[in-house]
Image (cartoon, rainbow, N blue to C red; front, side, top):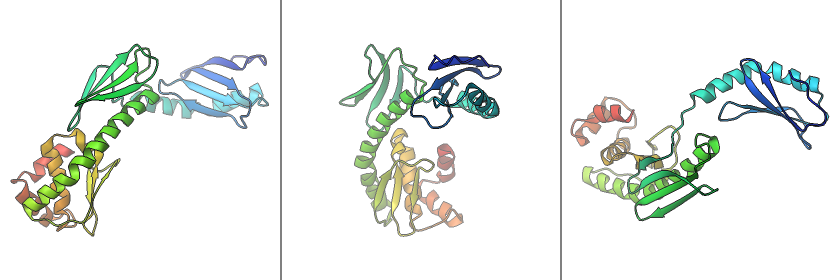
Length: 237
């Protein structure tokens, strides 16, 4: 490892198979810590009283951890790019580079523009999170306005009874139905075409009668999807 001058607050060193590591001496820090950034770069922060030998030992003892997490970062999916268009149920969202210095978003009728400074790293966690937050807000507003009313329509059409519809930002499910007939629907349904939104709603309504995924459930779901239950379920997966 390169020698760290006591007069320097920040220093960069090169580690074989890892790359550049930025080491920062920080007042108020009580322990040596490490962070992997979205581009795979490594930052180590340590208190003023930590010796160069201690910092070096900490880094070298975590080489395997660094490599593992750099690999995960390299495989991380980047969902949003400049000049991308995303269609929700009611809006078209455009992600555009801007000459400004701040991330902004604006709505004009059915158009949404997310403006990202052109010199930003759009693949960074910060920018990706900002874009997702804007899209989630739009999807939530649309979902609250659309989904409960659509559930009511389809329930009346097919003769189902349910309790309450809850609209939520779910991580791993499009929807769910409780044992007492409450239906939870994911805000991200607003990114799907109408026929798949209807399929998820019908899927959950079917669970108000059939509380598992047995033969009776699929028979019922087939009856209300014109025999397309398995094909629609395959599309959703």
